[in-house]
Image (cartoon, rainbow, N blue to C red; front, side, top):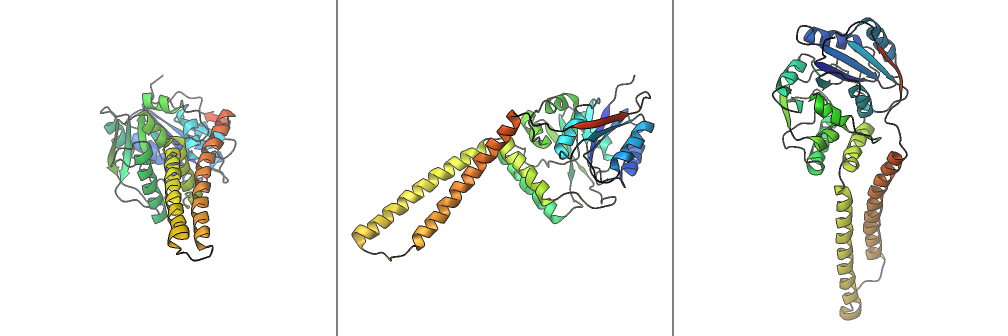
Length: 313
């Protein structure tokens, strides 16, 4: 049996119109380049994506189909695929053909120079302004919390060598964030410029809630810095409150210069009340995630895995 050089791991959600074209494009790009496998993970799509994946997997020895019992999220689906990937390198890409399969060869060639991960950098992104803003914010947060190298774009299109993939798949928490895990494992990263294509068909599954979910995974999943910032903020607020108290005590007892009323009280209550609630919210997020982790909340549940009985491609 031939060794698989590249595993292409693709989470799928409501993309039945694209799957066959995506498979054809990948096959065309890699058929004379190296041995490969394509792992489609159906994240409980509402359309007939799984039926399309199953049909392809039964008739093509280069395809593995994984069907999840419930929608688990993109990063959980990716872990499911990475855990069965056999390749010396694993490519992660989206299911909408905005990532050009021909660029897999460029990513592979660059990563083979000795890097653990090679990201695809899109000079021009064919996506909404809102999604661009969300990506930029998460990138800046990653620089602050997990030491993301300046200038590296955390692209959803990337290639990872086998040893790094093995480390990524050890992550046991219920809220994985693949790029966050990568950044806690290695700084041996690089990127190459690629073209971001128009979506093949349908509409993007990217929503504000998904952007917020990524932000919270990064914000509370890979660093205690938010807790430290909450502590510092609380300390600063205490100092400010103490100084304001001295000022009003002086006005009341010495200067005899004060205006009766509740304006100051209301302002202070709103300010400190908001600060306390924010701090408690951050702490609560950590405690909630710890609770779910300790109770072994599953990352995903697999209903079925389909692969051809033929020899590997």
